[in-house]
Length: 100
Image (cartoon, rainbow, N blue to C red; front, side, top):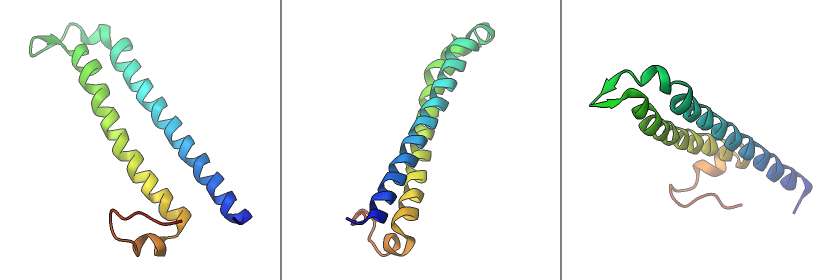
């Protein structure tokens, strides 16, 4: 294994971990904001017979999590293309993956 390949692997994982960390921070902030900070102001507003703060805490955090999953998948696909090279990725069939 060459030193350049090893450096690319380290860069890949460093960016991957930074992306995961940032997305988890966003999810934690959104969940904390919706469930705790905004709970009091929205508790007086009723939506389908339940306080609006409940909807934000229960549904909002789940929806944000699903959006973050799709964003992560898109960013990781772009990172894979950047690390492995676009020509190699575009020549593979969908679902077959990229050989290293």
